Image (cartoon, rainbow, N blue to C red; front, side, top):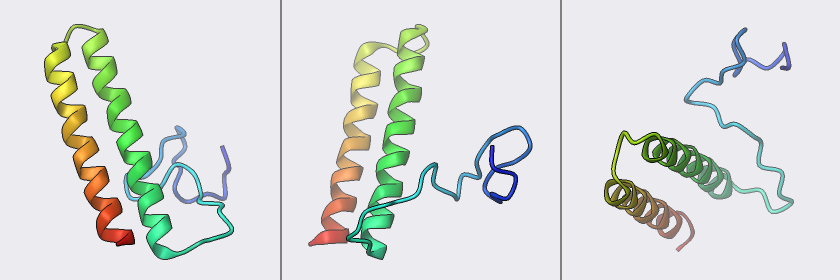
Length: 83
C-alpha cells in the first residue's frame, strides 16, 4: 500500500470513484482512460458474479444474464467513446 495514494484507505481499499490501476498506454486520451475504468469495473463485477454463482447464491443462468448485460454496457461505452 502506498501511503501517499489518496485513493487507498488504511485497510487497503480503494475509493469507488478511483480506478484500481493507472492507464499506462503511450496513446493516452481521456476516452481511453474512461474506457479503461469501464473495463476494470466490468472485470470487478464479473468476478463478483462468478463468486456468487460459485457459492450457490445465484444460478448459472442468472450469472450468465448479468454478465451478458454488463458486456452490452461495456460494448456500448466503447462505441460511444470511440465512434
